[in-house]
Image (cartoon, rainbow, N blue to C red):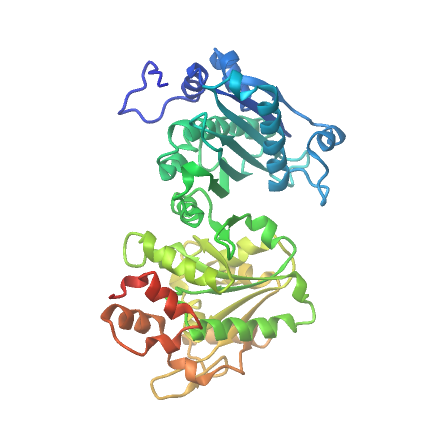
Length: 476
């Protein structure tokens, strides 16, 4: 049922928060529950204030006391409450109650939903800004299985009241989007920020599941978060599911490998394996508490102009097929990546990179927006226990170039020596020399031109995937 509201036309795609809540309330088929923990009942209050809420809200609740919450939803193994696991338990529990207490045969036309959130706002000392999980399980046809949208937010405001207000608005946008914009997930994503300042809140993880989103690849939705400026970095696991960076990186030793991976080659894998072997033998590194990230920057994805989503998915699928965790970031400069990783851990950090990329980070033009220039950037980069594992290259004369003979601008030589002789730069010495002639851009050209011989330069099984799925413009 569609209800036209005053001021809401086809040309006006951004109705007010109140108008969105009212439109939901006036739809006599939408009916469900709200369960909100940790920041007040900020979402449901918009529906109460909009009017006609009795036709929409079956129940609303908050369980602030931890014992009450555990008795309702079950105790978490890690004793934490603002987690994806807690959110899922809330959605499961509340939906079961809804179905048990509202028999379907008595409500044949109702489209059931459950909205839930579990949130921690800024603490009294203002040390931790706060974060939360929210989600909706819903149907747009009474005979349809449930679909679901879940997301994680990080607050950037410094007052709990302001955080509560923005939580309420984004919750309404989510519910409205679930019912009225589910056929356009990319637009739904952008509409989550309707009437909200992007600087107020960050969405760093989102997942779409269920029959309405069968054709949605959540990795592509992750890319949209970075592309739209909703977050600076997203991550997904080998199964292709979006994962929360904080959960993956928290108190871990981290090795990051940046590349275009277009496609992933034997030299990429050798660089990763040799760097990892050296990394886990560091005295301060525990192998069991180490995570490896393959990172692609947004600037790399858009190097040819607009982002080619198929090209992105080709790279993502290949990396995932090799069992890797992938990060998409907006960190063009390495120091920004290191700064980001340092938010989640004080353990050992490492970057694995080739000589040419390493030389490039000493180019002062990249740091003109910093008051302290390259000194400030490198201070941030190497402050947090960082090491660089350097993979060599061959010059035009066939000479092996590593940390001992690489060429820098004369003004950078003494600056470089400081990091080199303090053990911050480590050469990978057991590299495969034959791999130094492998370049992904050359392989990409061979693939597109239908040439032979490129297959042997890729990890096992990758060439078959490229051919089978017609990746990178391969000629069939």
